[in-house]
Amino acid sequence: MVEFDAAGINIYAISYDSQAQLKKFAERYGITFDLLSDDDSTVIKRFGILNTLIRPDDAMAERFYGIPWPGTYVVDSQGVVTEKFFQRHYATRDSAGSLLHSALGKVLIPKESPQAVHQDERLKITAFLGDEDLKLEYTSRIYVRIELAEGLHIYGEPLPEGFVATTVKVEETKGLRAGKPVYPKTTPKEFEGLDATLNIYEGIVDIAIPVTATKEVRNWGQKRTQDSLGVDLVVRYQACTESVCHVPRTEELTLEIPLAEVMLPRR
Image (cartoon, rainbow, N blue to C red; front, side, top):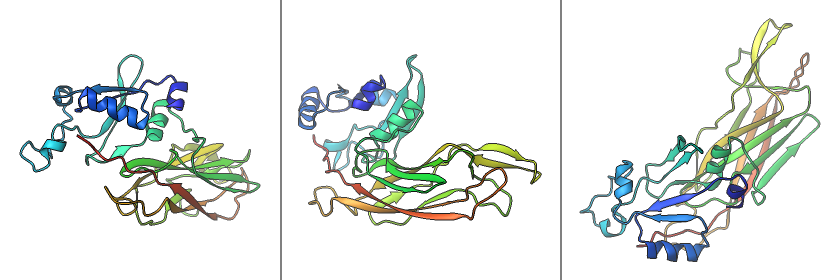
């Protein structure tokens, strides 16, 4: 909340719970932003986000019918929706860090975020989670930030044969569902000596990998079995100047990510 307040971003959450239930929930978890009660799911239905996989005659209908698809709208100061985040499964959410970075249009390193660092004379690589911890079925982002020394660049796809594009890989980890890395837009640069225009990155490069903690590490109603998750990352790149390309490098980093307690749904 501190980061959202500092950025001037207001948060409103709407659910099908009653005012009394929301008040109790807010007091229990120390929630200070506004929680709005849509007790009969009228607004949820008008927005077309009612979870239709849960039907009124289902066995769990009393507890779950009326919930929306979990999602978030990012709205600008003029009331225009600039981005939206929605998930198919009722238990999956996008994390606070992911939403903050989207609303700001830039990536911040949270103060309490776990980090792993590699640094040499050419660049600094910092791997960090966009949140303080991973919550069950919340989609967060692991960021790999590459800070290049002045005068150096690295490459991005597409590239002709013979050049090494920058890549980030999350090794398979039990209890972690990792999506495809999202690379920033490259800058085309003409190299007269090569008679070619290549896609490059300079300065600071942020690569994002969506990750979600699954029930393999912490299931609903089960006791805590581990407090953190070790995630191995492999970063491949080739640093070059205008006239010289250094040998391609592969750096391996391990990020130890704390796991949050499970917040069970209540009615």
